[in-house]
Image (cartoon, rainbow, N blue to C red):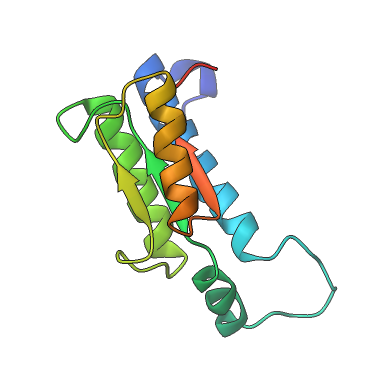
Length: 123
């Protein structure tokens, strides 16, 4: 078995893994409702909580950019794992940095998205 130091991870692979994991963890945290009662929750409880989540995603480019494609695929997979249907989440692509990103986020919020992720925008 190789040690961690013997595995060669490129920076891009590390970012893909970390970004996809972060989206999944945040969505999973939202689906759980953020409270711990100490009792067992059934799968139906978590799926009903997931249906109250309407995520929105904003990308600088579209599927033709590897970075953005990885973000889009991770977002779709996280939503699928949580039982969030494709017609529930919203995706805005080719959004320039600046005021356009703010406007896209405001449009997603106005459309009912209660959690919004952007992949590479500077404040």
